[in-house]
Image (tube, rainbow, N blue to C red; front, side, top):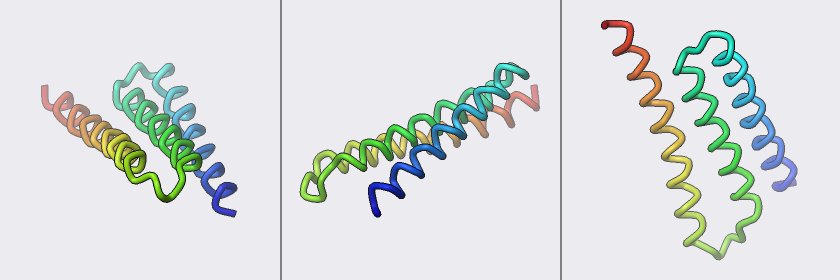
Length: 87
């Protein structure tokens, strides 16, 4: 059951990434590009978590750092969008 749910979550992240990529192509807004990259990273993270055994702590650390990078990318996208509006 865990594998099925992890796969569904990974698919949802990748679908959201494609969704934002479509809007980036239409509007050329960098916010959508950053969100698309972040969701693809989150999808890859979920796929990685599905293949790592519980006893391999080293790999968990790397995958959680990857997740942190995705969330920091989302944060950067929001800050970048708000700063661009002021200029």
